[in-house]
Length: 434
Ligand code: HGY
Ligand code: MN
Ligand code: MN
Image (cartoon, rainbow, N blue to C red; front, top):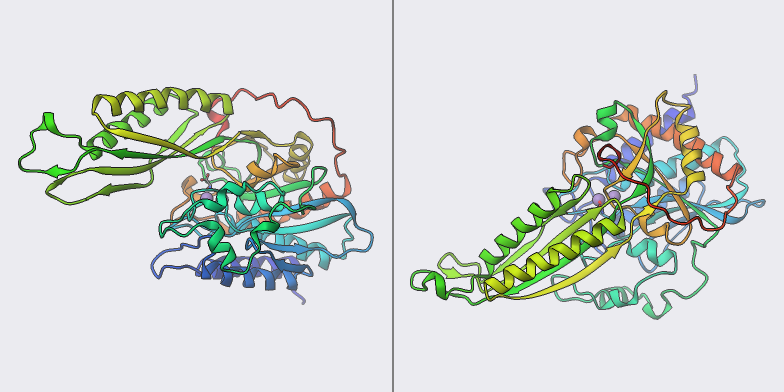
């Protein structure tokens, strides 16, 4: 008996997750960052998988992988689906990858079923959602929206290479950036499925959920200059210890943001100089990642934090520079798209839930250009950005079945574009964020 095509495509999907999870710049953990050789290897593989799903593919100069469904009777506006294929350092193998490979598999199934799309459908693999190399995220999605911040080209990586030089070295003409027409247009719709990266679906014992919004986020770099000196002779009152100042500041970040159950703040990177056992720290750089479900909430907390940090620097006679490297407003996912996703999920699970994502996604950026929505898939212990990140195959199968329905539903009943509703921010309760 011939195997069910859905089972065949599903098995291939599981294998591809494993394969992509091995393409890393490191032998002992998964790390695949923007413009790296590993990203080239991964993009070629993704391109081949898109080709075998019947898509016409190309890898653009920004290292996005674009797969277009050729269909005579397709028309505008377009339906774009996908996610990112770069990773953080020491990553899990589902973050980004699952949503992209699920989208390729869903298109393959629809093509096998002889489905004829009414709209242009593109599957998109974004090159830099994590923003590890240049501390600037959504590079691939903003490029495809024609909304790339050209100032980013001067951003340097830890080796002092600028983004512009890294792109030009690959033969990419950066003067072509934002030249119209952009692939993602205002009347289009973008759909992304992604692991939740949080504990809510697991706490509700649900495989799938609807995302109603994505939190505002900021990435900040703090540079402190004190005075290095001898550990054994310099009395405390004479010290300008940058590392102790940074320590007081980092605790101030936690104290302020921990008071607000919906807010998140993380210091993930710190560089200390001279970093010697018997020398007082003279210079420290560290980063702060801030999140809040709504932009206004984040702005208010950041204002308070900035004055706390300036007070600490003043009291310790430390010079301080605050560099806001990224600031992205919160968004509300399109209501019609949310309804369509809910309708499709309800065919595969009895209970429904929707909540705001604390994690950032390319949808956060693309929603500034066109209508967008997301479906979440449960992940074990809500763990992500960690090698133990895991999604159960039965949940992946539910997601695949639902995603096929979502793509067909939106393509068939493409919601008409209403006048932009005021982006009223929905009040956020603790239970409604991941
Ligand atoms: O940081 C984030 O929220 C996402 O995983 N890039
Ligand atoms: Mn991530
Ligand atoms: Mn992600």
